[in-house]
Image (cartoon, rainbow, N blue to C red; front, top):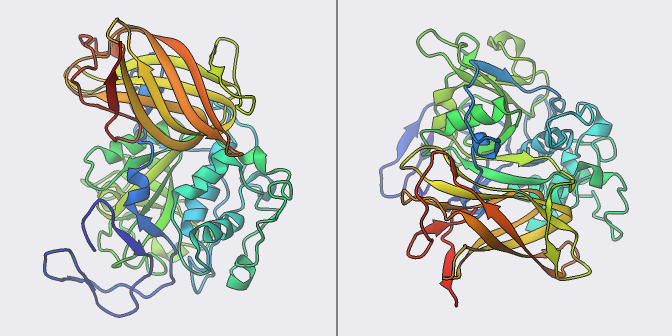
Length: 472
């Protein structure tokens, strides 16, 4: 396994008593006994996550942007039902666990929420949840694969932002490749599934787990903010059929080499587990409600398991959160669009967030579109006579969500009126642009001194450097 920013490996589990896990430039490491199990179907690819919009902490989106004190435990309600991917004898295959976690799990939960957190419907019912089978078949057509191969993750969320998906009732899951490969992407799509736009979500953003010492705290913040977190990482040894619990919690940190599995974080509890080592995330799996076996000692609901914070942080890699759709409201700042084909666009909020003195400052725009667009870039021209303009990539579908600029030089962005230009394309492929102006006040909660972007290092929503130009 290469330790780079762009590793890619097809998920499978060990089929022998011992396996070797190779790291670039190092000797082979012997991995302890792992029980043989099914192909889990997650194609871990950090490149797609590194190119995506990087999620802001929930506090950054509050008004005022202050981090609340976290409770010692929190659990999501109104969850989609525990899915059964694979069979009891072969859990996890065929089908992609990414379709189950990022599509069915995160997608169904987010689509069932209004922007203010209130509930639209109960996603545990088949008619109120997303079809993982349809999404899996669609991903294979887009990626040029076939069942039982795995898949990438973020394409499922992009599909749910742009066009949605049919219901689990309309296109149910069945554990047969002959069935999954035959699911059609009809010529008159999406009219063949008239209810699929009901399951569109607003936007999504990604979270790094591996190598981030604050990942567990960030994930707990999302859960406390009533956001589910879909994630991918290596498969724990014994996870399919012989998972081990201590005081009801998984503490396993040995992994199956070259494996991958996607699941959903739906809660946490700082008090569960072994005394002196308490604290665990509640994970919803896709192996059905007979997993884990009743005799295993789990204290979680059927189909779920508690993972110790260490087990999760040391074995998992990639994650994402999603945001519900929102309609344009009275008070939103409407933008001027350049095309008849462009849906209406607006800025709901424009402000600065600086969590603490001496740390980074973010200039955040909250976007709303009447229909999704592929937003390619966000340009902001700062106040003053220098006409300093910064252009940052976005590169994702969005109907409601946020973009931002970030600087980490101890300064805030200038206060005043900024000119805004958004560039992108409609779902039909028409190039569109939006222009307008927003008023930016001082940074909060930390008040940093304002300074021009001239000469500063500024990054955009994806973490890539923004382009700063000067005009007169």
